[in-house]
Length: 394
Image (tube, rainbow, N blue to C red; front, side, top):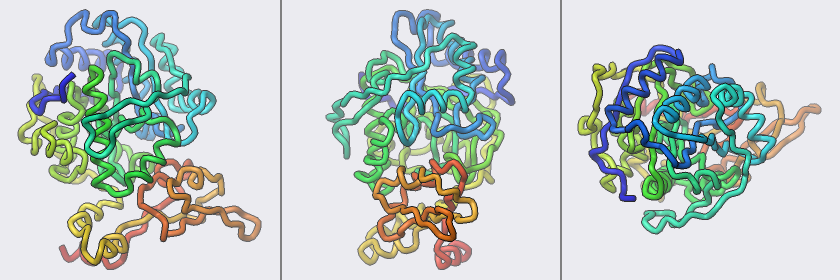
């Protein structure tokens, strides 16, 4: 399959709640606008890739909404799909027991049973060649995704401490199995090269599979996403055959035009337009209100620092960058952050009979895996005081 066209349209529908009938109607209208016929998925292996970053209740807006998964299943079957598999690789250990626990806590197990969906528990993976990759030429991918004919990229719009925005492109990082994600963070430690890797991965999947991206922005997450932010109702669903074009439309929705490194990298390759103004929007709904107050992650100053990558050999940008720190009052010593650190810079210390984590700043690459996966929200982001002063002056 060729690369996604930069002219691939994006459909938008307003939806104020996760009401099943309204969700099904919105998906049907968007599918019609995008040319999905009545037997479009007939005889093909369809895999839904949700966002199940961690074991979190759906009301926290960090994971896929169960009601939307059910509506997507109904939509796929209305257009010919037979058995539908739900497959995800969350951060951390990738085992059948972990998958079942996450499916249960996130409400996905109950939704899958109601919709007669099959939940993947096969934790094997395959290596897939990516000869056209700019920075990465092969990926380890969970087997159900590699063997799918059609992938439904069911993402949620979230602010993200590392990539600023988590949407359709970033959601595909979840096809990399378990702790291998930490190895990818270590291999691609800077934001520009990590973004290029994500574009390589998404582009590879779009070239080898039919991909449909569906974005839940009915309730998004602002602030310190992808797990530590705050739910923010936006009332919008998006759909496109191009994850890159969909992300560009989402970028406009939250008023962050020109600030998302993955869409910038994709635009430079001709995978999407350079500006949200050039995205082809289809459907009868009026354009959504563009937000001016969607809260940024505390790492947002990194966007400013990316303009200074070589000043003083890069030491200035590194010293000024926000970094993760442990809130010792919240830390329970569970060790999740220790196991999730790509560079092994987090250690457990015992004081007064209590175990607490500590991050050694010299080895930290600011990937924020610890913040993303901490089940107790005990990892905070510390900004350099001088940078705070510069931002106020600016």
